[in-house]
Length: 282
Image 1 (cartoon, rainbow, N blue to C red):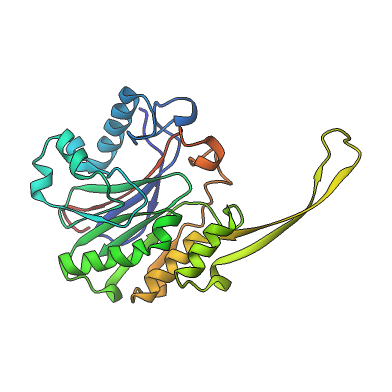
Image 2: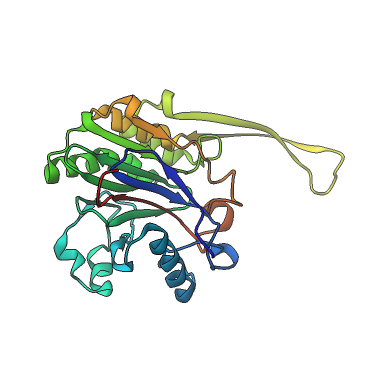
C-alpha cells in the first residue's frame, strides 16, 4: 500500500511530529510524489489522494489536517473548536494570511509548507499545546519565532523555559546565497551577523567560447544561516538550548528527497511539517 515517507521527530511522548519527504504519494513532475499544498499549482485530485494517505497514516479524518495559506508575515492562528466546525472552504478562508498555527486540541494535526524556508515546531507539554511555524527569510527577519512563542504564552500560559522545539529541513548557510539588500535587512533588524552570515568568494567562471581558459572574475556573495537565526531567536526568549533540535537537512542539497524551490522553481511541491497532540500520552 502506498504510504508517505515521513521524517519523524522525538519531541516527547505526548505528540507526533514529522516532516514529509517527496516520497510515497501520487503527484507527478515537480510535485512528485507527495505534496498536499493547494497553493503551488498541483493537481487537486492528487492533493486529495495524498491528504487521504497522510490522514490514514496519522489515524485522523481529513478535517483534522490543517495548514494555512502562508504569506511570509508573522501572524499565528489559534485552532479551536469553532474553526473545526467550519466547512473546508470556510477554514481555508479563515486561515488565509497566517504563517503559524497553534492548538491545544488532541487529534488535530497542524502544519506548515516549505521548500527551502524553515519550518519550526513547538511543544508545550506543561499546558498540552503545540505550534507549527513557517519562517522564510522575511518572517525570520520579523522574528516570527519570537512572536509565535508570545502567542502561545498569551493563549495557553506557555512558559518558554518549558518548551521543546524542532527546526525542520530547510536551506543551509552554504546554499542560501542572498543579495546585499537581504543581508542589510537582517543587520538593520539587530541580528549578530557574525554568527548567522558568511561571505563566499568565487574566483573564476568558465569561458563558454573557449573551454581551455577561464574568464578572470571575482564574485562575492553573502549567505545567511536561517536555521541558526531561528534557533537564536528561540533561545533569546528563554527556550533552553538543549530543548532545541535542528534537523540539519539542507533541502537545496537533497532535491531528490525534499522539495527545493530554488532547484525546482515555485511551481513545485512543498514539504509539510506537522505536529499533533496524541489523544492519550503514551
